[in-house]
Amino acid sequence: MLSGKHILLGITGGIAAYKAAALCRLLVKAGAEVQVVMTPLAKQFITPLTMATLSRRPILVEFFDPENGAWNSHVRLGEWADLMLIAPATANTLAKMTHGIADNLLLTSYLSARCPVAVAPAMDLDMYAHTATQENLQTLRRRGVAVVEPDSGELASGLEGKGRLAEPERIAAFVEGLFDEKKKSLSGKRFVVTAGATIEPIDPVRYITNRSTGKMGYALAAELARRGAGVTLVSGRTQLSVPQGVERVEVETAAEMYEAAVAAFEGADGGVMCAAVADYTPAAVADRKIKKSDDDLSIPLKRTRDIAAELGRRKGGRLLVGFALETDHEGEHAAAKLERKNLDFIVLNSLRDAGAGFGVDTNRVTLIDRSGAERLPLMPKSEVAARIVDRMESLLLK
Ligand code: C5P
Image (cartoon, rainbow, N blue to C red; front, side, top):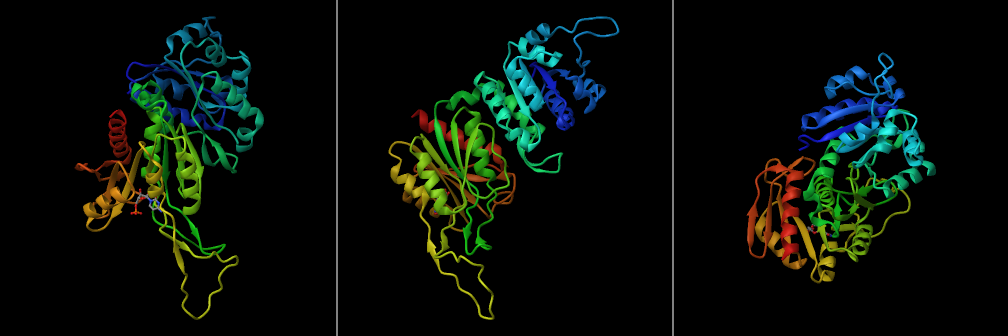
């Protein structure tokens, strides 16, 4: 919660400025006091009236009120704020921040701010990818500015790519994370998380995959990062964007996931094996599209390697958590996997539970270790992730 926190919300002149309205509402709803400061151009994209209404305060744009000459003190704003959040932050404003240019009230406030500063960049994909922008972001990061990564997707220009302002919910969660001390509990630790479905090609066109969406693994990676851990997320196919503070390695096949997970496990304190890894892959991948004929077709499959079991062999005193998805004899099968893969505990999903399984945002799981089973109620995957990470933390403290 943001109760009583003073947030100076800077809005710059980009098409994504309209999302600042929803963001402001979320921050106010979470209990924050929000003072909006806009660049002159931002007024073209979202009206001062909208922002003043949502923030419940007059917004600030100019150094002076032209009507009565009253001075809008950027020094006072800088002192008042517990956090300055610039969302959206255009390439222009990021460049000016990097170079200390002070030609509007937002920028003078930034230079005067004594509080932490966060930016949520939003711009066209080529502007975002440009070396100038990337180097500016690097410099700002080095100076301690927190960056809310933009999303990938359709942009206002009609092009597809990275540069879309993070959704207001994600920015608000990021802000809460900045104020949340709990996230520090895992700082200095590093984890490998596997997530999503693998893709096993049959020929250049067809492949074998499964119904996993990656939601549970991504929620776990996000929770570990929120508590300050370094996270390498080895991800198969998914539609999800990278959680804040997480390093993603994208893979397709079980073999690629094996290589990436084993490499990332080298310097890690533990792993969470959440991916739905194919157990079988075509024995040979046809180099041309397989032509249909009137006959039936059989495709020989060979076994893939078990990533969790391999990390279990290498783990030594480190922590390893696995998942099991069962449709029958759940407890017995899960307990057998705990031993076979040398896990510290295993998270059992049953497809028999309503609200649990693929694609949904909730899950109902049982945590099983050598001393017994703890069945958790149906809850959002983010909360399931928090419970799993709580259990990991308690084992790390032992
Ligand atoms: O043996 P089963 O596939 O049911 O075990 C599930 C657990 O093992 C999950 O944690 C899954 O991520 C992991 N696994 C793996 N590599 C495989 C198969 C499963 O890491 N090839």
